[in-house]
Length: 119
Image 1 (tube, rainbow, N blue to C red):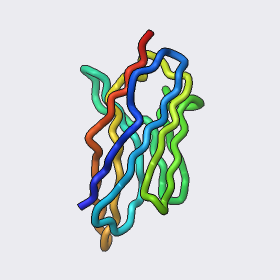
Image 2: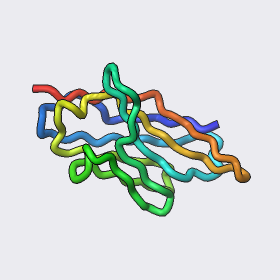
Image 3: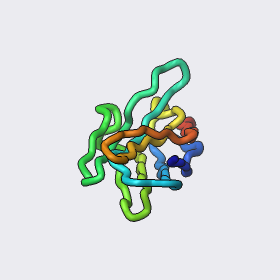
């Protein structure tokens, strides 16, 4: 089993910045892609950003140029640096990780961390 623990959420004014962290722990074999999803009230969960174990990244159009995803493979940790935050970025942000074990991929989710952007 793999546990994902997120930190770094909170409240910020428009134009501000936050940095989210997500650390994977437990009986880890090999972590593949990691990412951040978000879910705003009344909306479906959507991908914000993702990163492969090799460092290739993918961003939602709405966050390109403002958010930056990175990871520390030695620590099994993924980060999301969020700059120039907008009220529409308000959501619960969930960490996601894919564990690769003997050819089987298992997806894990964190508990979510609230990000609120408001003046």
